Image (tube, rainbow, N blue to C red):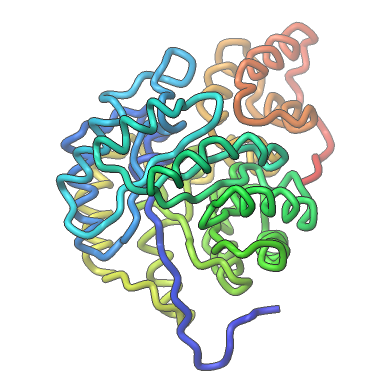
Length: 352
């Protein structure tokens, strides 16, 4: 049930993550100059929070996650210098990022940190949340792979983030596995459990990213993530310029100027893309199986190397309940399938 009142124009803040989540679609190869150009367009359009950094977050530039074209502080500095109003944010994943790296981002001009943890591991966020608040940062916190917990259990994890001082708490559909009812139910449960504002981060693997975002807002989410042209891991994110138009049509006030946003998407971001952001077979099965979005490219590579089907790898990963940080399991599963000669489609679905 919607909590909006008739004739109300509730405020929703669109947060753009083209320059962080979108990095996964370009092998983390955006240059600082390109980051500056995109940031300038987003700022002109009225996007008030712009997330930048390596696609996996601060400190992730490595042989494991892929080397970026520049350092995180260089990306942050480029975005800060190109904008006059927007707040520049970074992603912090405990176990990958360090507080020293977060300090480097602060020194470069970042004023918001988004602390991301697996949905069952909220306690891992306490140290960075408390530390960042002590430094005067605005703190958002992500419950990644939120589809893996039922609404009440997810709300219990969110309550921990709230107690640590997170100012915005996100339901994050990291696998693009949710449909609107599930997205709305999770946001509604959090609304009853926390005093912080709520956010929603959609991936589009099942083609319902925009619908999920609208439903999340109807249930009380005030921060909605997107990326220009949908740029992002696997099938990509909810598309920022489409979100702006859809939310306006739905009666929300985003404070965003649509046409400059479209111009930035069409004339700045689109030429930088390796290929259109689409829901292909791998992206679809990834969402259907409930597997982390950044497994998209490694799964394609493993399938090619071992001569097995991408869908078979992903369905097995879904059955095993793998999460972000377990990318090594992709190779293990591909090798096992090749060894057993299981090239046929695996039957059955997994719970999302």
